[in-house]
Image 1 (cartoon, rainbow, N blue to C red):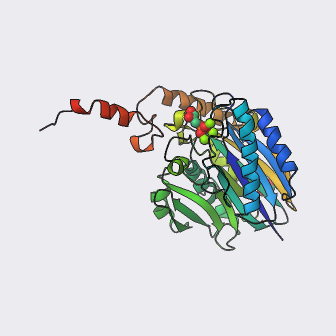
Image 2: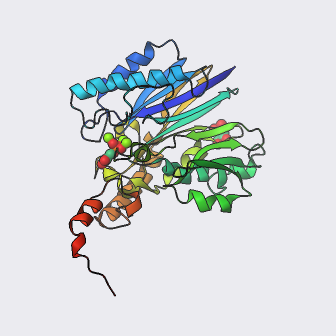
Image 3: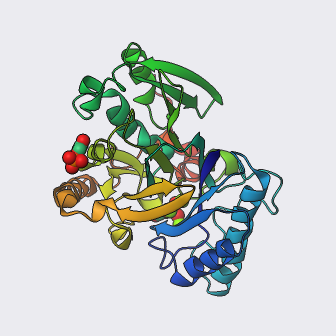
Length: 362
Ligand code: 13P
Ligand code: 13P
Ligand code: MG
Ligand code: MG
Ligand code: MG
């Protein structure tokens, strides 16, 4: 029988500012999920100011009852957040009421359904102060780069490669690339992570789901500044998929992502433990947490908080150095994002106010 892993997340109020989640909200969420007969197992955690509900069940993807459970959990937490006047209480709940599916209502969603293997190691990656395109580079490395994943070279079960489903978030369409043959074509698109995002990765020979992410653009849905999406990603590991260490390896080099302060800056993605995931300097730098679980009949044995390991100390140091360097540019691009990517900006207002002072050049 198949098991479904659903990771649903939302920022429903920051403690303090946009840095973290108040423990009372996490306890409330745990209490609600513990009381639900729908779930086989669950783990409630946070990265920065985002609450993450990691849930297993046998209801399949896009299950209305599961989505409603998540929605109601976030709604209950929002009530407490409002009472405590936490920052941006209810920020990611864009709709007034639940309507069948949580997609498009604000919370982020990554789900996969599969037949559990003899051993089923999975990693749930969760990021704060960035957007879904932040997963493009690490997913490319995990599933298409032999310098990252030696399994692509020496594991007969991986040697044929993987299929990448890429979404165009602006025009709402998707395309599947077969790698390694179409690597160069794919890179034309996924190198522009503000628009093209890797939604899912599939094993080429078996068609099995290997990875899936939450891809949406909160600001495109809301039509106004509502912070960054702060995306999640589920990756299955070992036996035909990347080894756990191969899935973690891309994060040893903190790549630049969009987000950080006011969702309007470029900065390094710093791998951290849950305990260290409280973006602080200039509301950042952006963070990523990796929790490992061994699934067994839907039970989540874990988590293993991977980036707590000292082998990621150097990545954190490097991220801090990059953060300092990027900060030195202040309000100048490319630290500040280019105009189309700015989450909110004074440009329209300032332009309007001084528009009569612009003189035609001839
Ligand atoms: P062990 O011998 O520790 O099980 O390691 C196997 C392996 O493949 C590590 O990547
Ligand atoms: P969040 O999306 O994490 O709420 O970040 C918003 C922000 O403006 C940080 O400065
Ligand atoms: Mg926030
Ligand atoms: Mg956040
Ligand atoms: Mg956010």
